[in-house]
Length: 455
Image (cartoon, rainbow, N blue to C red; front, side, top):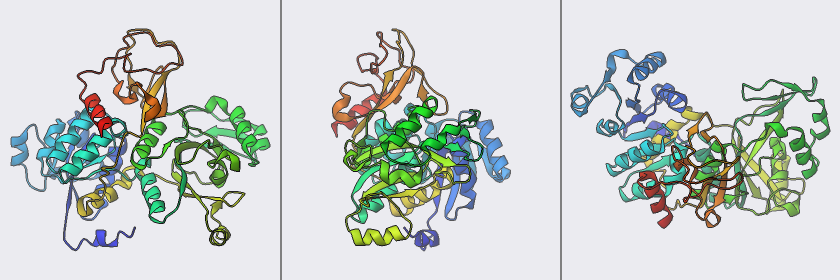
């Protein structure tokens, strides 16, 4: 869309932002961008470590004289109207006169409660915590609609970027065969030296001259050869499945498979891969979400964890013209790939906030629990095991995530409700953790999840 009118803002609106979970990662990138954005002000940030908040604000360049640490509602009321507030209790954020609450904690209990408190006060909510949306998204969208507020996923993270691309395609009448993203780290091969690098920043390079044998795509056999060669680098990543869970729940697209496909693919090959098997691709069904590992040379640009859709080419002459422009199309000219090779985290997020605050764009009351993210034991887990979400990818030790269509999820326990749960019985390797294996009673997020299933 054209953002000019939003930027010019003839009505003189101002978005006043509060951020929960603000000092690191996503929250930091948003804090760094807000001072550059016209029509937006930072009003309050919240973290259990208020000293860290102060340090981060000063590091970015916020005026220290405007910053006030508030312990209660009274101190908030006494603070200057243009003060930048720091609070340690997320419930105080909603008392600060904000129009927009951005939730970045990744903690399902905190973020769902904060979202409900804000929405019921008519404060717009911008959800970065994808773990929360995967289990509470349907309910939170519904509550927003009921209270005349906006609940939105945010640009800068893959789900919203992909939803924007998908909705653009639907607006234009394109049939979407598949939608997805690349996983976070690239597979990079140096054709001159034969060295291969997995770009996670931790894994050393290795000599892999035999990559030349499967460097050029010739069909599904190329994918199998790459998989065999790079098998030790392959994994099912919790964050990837969670992000596709969010897209599935809004679009109605279903998972390509329980563990998604993860082919090792160059962007130029996507239109040959994410298409039906009968056309030479890997899909057993269409209308799916999926993920790939990006393969590139050292002199080629990264896909940057970006997003793609595969669409049908229905008018041959039209698509012949577009093919001549260099667009990515399948060998049989029946499919095209359209993609955004980026997700810029908090740098992009102000666009979502302004669209929500100024134009009420964001809420999806049609959101339903189309797919459920669950977990399969990757080893025998004894009774009494405490499950814990941890690490950069928010994984659970001992579990491999899977993304299931709701109709086949039966009694699978939602992955991100298992944090801190204790197994009530042994779970054998290869078995999913079910609602009978843990006690989620009394967990507010579980109640919200069940309400979502009723919609």
